[in-house]
Image (tube, rainbow, N blue to C red):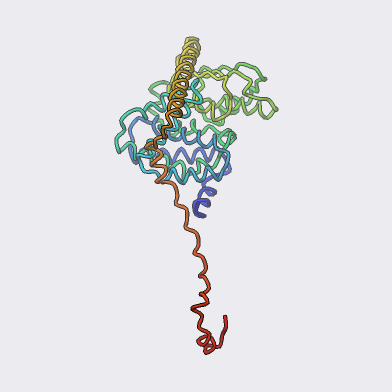
Length: 336
């Protein structure tokens, strides 16, 4: 990686994680609306969420910097394939969240035009250049609601008002959550969770007391499917464990709880069947000694991988004895 790229990464990460999240949200909002626009804001949010998941699962900053440089070099088609791959992998490791996160990644199954793919590429590049990968590992984005900040930035006032949605400032929501500080093994229920910022505050308060939030049951719901989807991703980003249920429905009724549990189990069963089929296919390929074909994304990544600089040239070899002209050397007054 070049020195310029490393310096740019270092300078792009503000000390305050909330300010950093705000900077990324503003850059993404500008990139999306200047390249594409429209009301499908779940697409740019999907891009940022997928990249944030990569940052969480990669603890080596140097490796993450290499990935950032390679991702930025992808063309628009390659970047679209990358988003599809990342969401497929997340669906495989967290099938319990699929019923909610589907609202974010369903666009990857559609036929995207060149204009949308170029906007997706611009959004990803804007987020990376603002240092999205500057916070890595399980604690990388565990102190701020990046996706909540993005939702507040991108959602129009009319869109919020149309469904009666009025987002509480993050600082207030975080403070309210920190006042709860549940005990280990508790059940925490938030029927109007938004993107889950209040639950993040509660989890932070537990960790400050030396408690483990993964021992709790975290129940969250929101009427807005986009907010519920972002909340589901946040639960993984914040390391709240596997005992999480995210619903999407009327928080004044308890029907969302039953539906969330039912849909969660259906998604887990479907993924188990998919894993079984994948293992069978892998076994057949192994027996038949079939080579693994290179995917379209792998070809794009190979082309985008930075070229290794050539090694420095070797010093010239001394002349062979048969070419040594003793008389000429004597005339020049030197021996070696």
